[in-house]
Image (cartoon, rainbow, N blue to C red; front, top):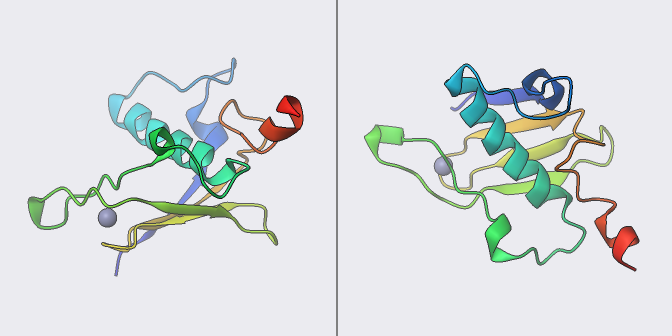
Length: 110
Ligand SMILES: [Zn+2]
């Protein structure tokens, strides 16, 4: 059973709201979580292909690369995500107002 990643995205940001650059490990993780935020908050159910986030885990030393599913959990307002293949999963809080928050995007366009 995989652990659940519980992430406060602001821990990965600097004062300007950008992803911290080091340590590299943290930056890579943050980029992964940022991509999930964009995918999960995209206002349309059918998000563009470039928003697809691939699983980064390597169970048995083989890249999983399954598409991550993500959604906003209405009660907590956290983003939940899971890899349907390897069951890697997590929760992201404090994503609202970050530069990857797409939830207001359609209001801007229309
Ligand atoms: Zn996976």
